Amino acid sequence: MHQRCAPRAPPPLSSRPMGSGSPGSRWAASLTAPGGRNARANCGRLRRWSRGNPVHSAVRQPVPGRARATHPCLYTSTQPMQLVLSDRGRPGEPTRDRVYATLRDAITTAQLDPGRRLSENELAGELGVSRTPIREALALLREERLVAIVPQLGTFVTRISRQAVEDAAFVREALECASVRLAARAATTDLLDELQANLAMQERVVDRADPVRFDALDGELHRLLALASGRPIAWTLAQRANGQLDRVRRLSLPAPGFLADMLAEHRAVVAAVAARDADAAESAMRHHLRQVTSQLGEIQAAHPEYFDEEPPRMSTVFEVERRPTARPVGRPRARRFGRDEIIAAIQAWTAEHGAPPLTIDWEPSRARARGQVWRAERFERGTWPTIRMVRRQFRTLGEAIAAAGLEPPRPRGRKPNLTGPDAVLRAIREWTRRFGEPPTQTDLDPYRARRTRQEWRIERYYEGDWPSLPTVRHHFGTLSAAVAAAGLEPAPQSETPADRLARRRRNRLALVDGVAGAAPDHGPGALAAAVREVARARSARDAQALDQALLELAGTALGWADRVRTPDAA
Image (cartoon, rainbow, N blue to C red; front, side):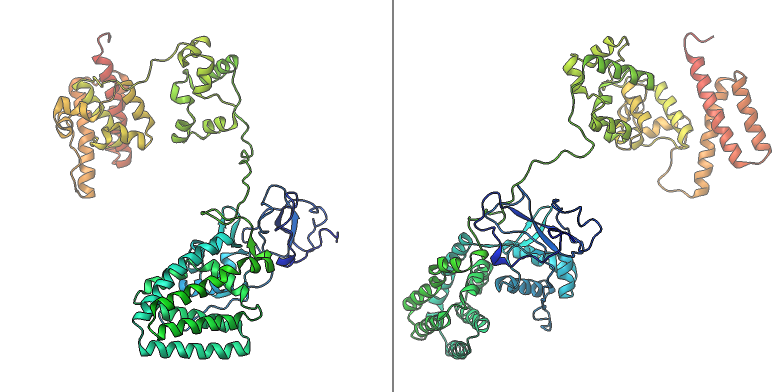
């Protein structure tokens, strides 16, 4: 295998050149499958970020413009996390809290080093829980700025920010100094016994040089003092802002003599509390809490790979340089259409649809709303002009249509519906013939027609020859009165299937009888043929054929009646 393409594990965190590299030494993580068929061909290529797929190995390659040189490499590690869910046997403990405590301890103890990618699937499999508590725990860690969720990249462990450490120290000093002052005034014998027992255990731990156990006892001592103040919320708030400070404390614990100095400061605080001296207890606690921040420069110099050189923004601790969003594949830039191209498009539209286009026919949003995919695709490909492009070359669409040698259509604006009572009755009968039921109030609502995409009904509203509900109420008062005037029965609120079938047949017969009364001789040959089809279906006792014949008869009769009522009818 080629040397550059050979899979290898990510280098140790201390050997990463991100902290002091030049702007040209930017790095990003890429994934390569060992022994792949295209291993040699992938040499030198920029690979995409992993989104939870099985990782074979991690290879660091330079990617210009991806991450700033002052920040760590974001990488996907192949080493197992070896995490154990804490306090699994505690009854009533929410799984989210146990997962949060486990991940927080792993980050503060550097078991999960800065820059490591945290996969929800991997964490769920490691801890034996579902993804929901993992996601909730990561959200809590993000509030403490221990992890960063980078869009389209994943969730990563953050580096230690000096500004965040100083902010956490400020909050903790304000809360714990006030708490220890109250604890000194209200100190009890039980509290002093617990504090002395804690100090005795700290002495034994210092003799064994066990920094992990000492850190746990240190936190327990501060918790006892905070709870003794009678303000337990102070300890909760201090812990919530203490994430970055805990990471610095864990790095400083292995320093020679540090545990002994911490033990001496703890003794001074407990002695002041035992003496009920609030001022001395506050002064000792303030001196104790400032030891970590006073040594922050030395700790950062000893562990530069864990720290961030610049103070982070409030939203995220990573500063990722965002490159301009690439244009989707297959969508070219919108080009300008000339006059000849627009005229050719208008002529093509007229040849395809039989009428010149309207303004709404040139709007991409209207095309998508109507579900006309072919027209929306034309707009997206940039091969079909929009109304703005037309107006760049012509003042109006009507002028462009006239330039194409066509007659512009009548403007399709909302005009008052001036249909009379006869037109309302004809519309109700046509509706019944078409759908088998008289129209309801929602059926005569233009907005409902637009929402249900009934194009034929919308066209009639715009043309002004289809009544709306206000028009019906203007002529008949109510829609029920209009349906009764048409000789039809409206649908009741509840009826049996047999009653509904009988009512529909009565409505069909009413349509036929109304036309027959107006024309006793049954009109021309088409109407007579329709009547013969009804008679043939009745004699054959075919219910389906009879219904179809009645519908055909009603349609023929309505058409013939409209023709007879016109002034120029023969």
